[in-house]
Image (cartoon, rainbow, N blue to C red; front, side):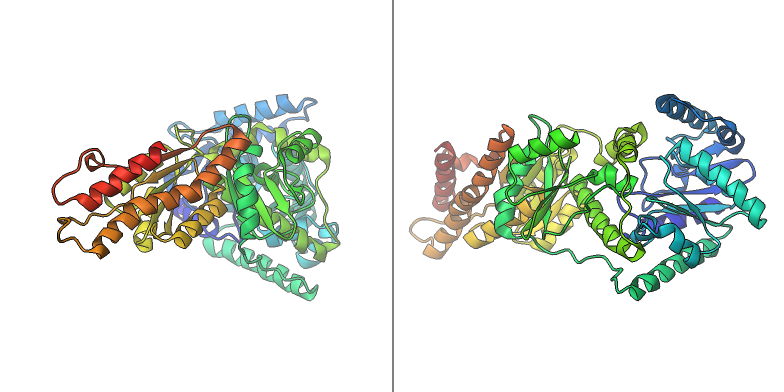
Amino acid sequence: MSLSTIRELSNFYGADSEFVLAGGGNTSYKDEKYLYVKPSGVSLAKITEKDFVKMERSIIRECFSWNSFADADEREARVKSLMAYAVAPGSSGRPSVEAPLHELMDFTFVVHLHPAMVNGMTCGKNGAAECAKLFPQALWVEYVDPGFTLAKVVFDKVQDYKKANGNAPSVIFLQNHGVFVGGNSDSGIRATYENIMSTLKSYYESKNIDPTAAVVEDADAEAVMQFAPSLRGWLAPEKSIVSVRSTKAFAPAAGPLTPDHIVYAKSFALTCDDPSPEAVDAFAAAKGYKPKVVCVPGKALFAAGNNANGAATTMALAYDAARVERLAGAFGGVNYLSDAHREFIENWEVESYRSKVAAGSGKALTGKVAIVTGGAQGFGYGIAEVLAAAGADVVIADMNVDGAKAAAAKLGAGASGVAVNIADEESVAAMVQNVVKTYGGADLFVANAGVLRAGSVKSLTKKDWDFVTNINYSGYFLCVKHIAPVMAQQNSASGLWSDIVQVNSKSGLVGSNRNGAYAGSKFGTIGLTQS
């Protein structure tokens, strides 16, 4: 069945970051009567055959006969209504806004992607001229606001192309956007994309520009600890908090490049040596929004999102934008989007919807970061499981790092497993730094890790006594010592409180026979908590 073919193509390209970031791009299959198109909010990497929205082609094509609209809101509302009406009975989902573009291509399969190597050309000042040399059979379309306007312009240009060439274009490059490839077979689509990518790779190399993606490196650890927890509050709406991911500093793109970059990483980044709430407020006053990307030159780059996945997506798009900007150097330098074009994207309901879907549904703990020590199994894993179900991004910190990572994998996106020996201060400090680097900080710390060695005080060895005390009591102290400053920094920036929860025992209230070491450690942690 041809739906299986487009699903396989979607999964193939969707899983490759050279072609797709943040679930961008869309695909379709058509027969004589229906178009089956990827819905908004479903990633190519994970799409299934039943996810594709079945649409009546004849209804979609009605929009090509419409005249232009004076009012953009009226135009987009009418198109949205028509696309919803075109959904066939029994099908569901919100059709991609680019469904009309898929319909106008005279091919069974259409795969639309935004590869960085392609956008180096589409965002280049000389992109159109060089494209004509590199891909003489392709159709180039100057930048047009996405939605109905773009579909109508491309439709008219395709009709002109057919008249001039006697056939439909199988490749359409959209300036500052990406590429549409049409074909009647799986092999045809793959061969076309292979040709596009290999041709561009050779071209970049001929210009002495490395086309490969930059290697992600760790940021300056001191800068991360200094700024990341505060940025969680400074970059968030009032009385809320965001996740912040950090990496080694690189120069972010100097302006807006494509709709994807604007939606997920905003049009501009804040670059300053000493980020502060005043610097963020000044940026917001000038640009109309708080930055999602903050660069401290030579030290670190920070990317913010509603949760860990959102921050990772922002970082990925920031890297991609910097790469596209670099690649555009092979095509005469960068052609940034105009203020009018970027503002359309920033205010477009369709992109707002896509961004909200990518952020995930709001739950009680969405956007909160929770650390659970000893969470690889047992009671600790149960705690982690409940927190993740409530929307938290959970860090499972455990001596058994393989077990921690396996447990995190069960919890899904946003969770991670890190190594820690809570009885070792260097290990605890490294664990906290790891969390701050990846998430920006933590809102909940669950001190769950603990051990038991039973024995009479007359026979218990000093080694066993120290083992229990070092983990249950001193280990808790070390965790509090290193996470508390991070939480205090977050509170100063956001006004929100964080929590430290110590999992205790009835032995922390009443001692028992042959249980002195364990009870003593639990009594001690209650005293430490109360203090």
